[in-house]
Image 1 (tube, helix red, strand yellow):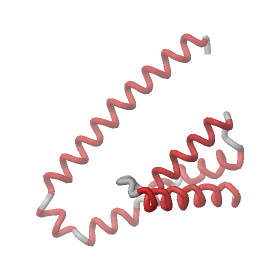
Image 2 (image 1 turned 90 degrees about the vertical axis):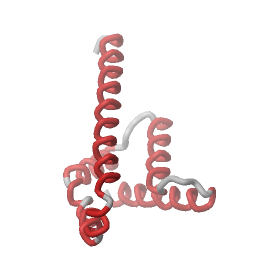
Image 3 (image 1 turned 30 degrees about the vertical axis):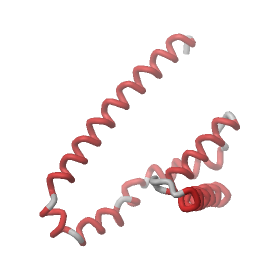
Image 4 (image 1 turned 180 degrees about the horizontal axis):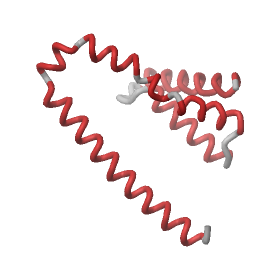
Amino acid sequence: MLHAIAALFILQLIGEVLVQWLGLPVPGPLVGMLLLLAGLVAWGRVPEALRDTTSGLLQHLMLLFIPAVTGVMMHFGRVSQEWLPFLAAGVGGAAITLVVTAFTLRWMLRITKSSGR
């Protein structure tokens, strides 16, 4: 478990370094997770320790949002003045997520039917 967490943190650090070094306009952890995805695709499987560790993190995902929600509440005055962009981003993001999820599910169902699974 410790090695899996260390790997996740190291990939996040590499992502941060690449973003700073290349001046990319994306979060470093996103680049780190893309590196993780590329590594897992190249390896062809997910190591059991990484699967167990990430499953544990996903079970407690809501706890990871507490700092962000607390930060928003500290700036509630500004949020209340600029509520429309927040609402548009929330509704738009939810709609995009719904559409992408639907297309992904449709694509995955088509793949599994064609492979006979």
